[in-house]
Amino acid sequence: MSWESEEAKQLTWEYATKSVLKCNVRILHMVGLWPLTDSLLFRSSTATIVVLCVAHIAEAAVNLCTLHGGLQDFTLALSNVSVVCVGVLKLTFFLRHERSYCRLVRVLDALVDSQREYVHAEPPLAALFKATQKRTVRVTIGFLVYAITQLVAWSFAPLIAAPGTRRLPFQQIPLTDATAFLIYELSYAMQVISIIFIALINCQMDCFFMATMLHTAAQLRILAARIKNLRLHNEDMRTIFISDEEAEVQVSAERDVTYNNLCLCIKTHQQLVRFVRHLDRIMSPIAMMQLGLGVFNGCMLIFPAAYSAESDALVKCLAAVPTISTQLLLYCLGAHSVREQGESVSLAAYSCGWPDAPGCCRRALLLVMRRAQRPLALTAGGIYPIQRATFLSLLQQPQEQQ
Image (cartoon, rainbow, N blue to C red; front, side):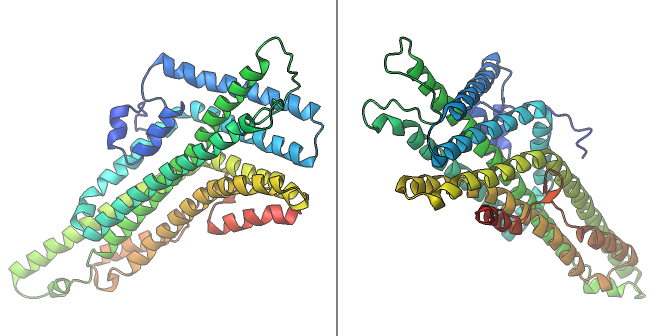
């Protein structure tokens, strides 16, 4: 299996039905990002989202230039527009590398299918696969519902404000009640539609990578179980020098089968290592954007809340911080799981009874152990490793800024 030779066909709605990333791909399709058809209408809707986001950014620039409020209003406006800017960058990056994303899904599905027969033969591994599938779907749907709830609350909050204020939900522009044209209504609709779609694209791309990482970690764990269960220490191996020719032939055949199974495990490990590298190349820029956005928004929201005597500043901070921290946590926990399960392959190779194995098996296992000891690191921007400790260090950044 090679991503260079693998044909990056466009995914379809029918193909997504059989994919382990079905939920993530279909949600990204419904929010206007991932095309599952060749429809011109879908491409036009994606272009409309981009145009609305550009208009939103333009209004944000007007807002920042004409803003006469305090520090809280300024930081809140910067925080809102930063989400739109990063969402547009993610959308643009996806459109430029759409074939790579399709290839990523197809290769992951092929890796899962290659180990499916071993999963069915071992009930614990089958339970692990099902648990991973359920976990990714639950996190994806849960985060989708949470994001929609927050977006609806923020979008329609101005409608229940005091009469006559005519405030916009995210960015304010100079308006008067005597405006002849429906500038306020059009601006309101533009901000709400653009922020809902781009924020959902932003969040669901993070969920897509989270699901990919968790499935990759599960495949590494299944591979470790396969290697550990090779039974190279089988007592029958020690009877190879007995005088009974039939027994000798039988043991030799069992040794060949064991070695062939080990070769299949090594091939799967090589494919998973290449897949993680491919995933890192695709995810690295997106992760860097999200980590930078998380630190920036953390500073923009926590700093004014810490020095403001008004309770609404604290409420806005408490409402936004869970979303920011959760998006960072998705990357950190997913990448940490891949790294951890990658290292477990080395331990499995060491625990499979190699001292009693034939020389060819010992040499092959040595190569597996040496390769598996090299961490399968996923990075942000190709320079910043993502792991569980990264999440804690990023949460400390806004506090240090104070």
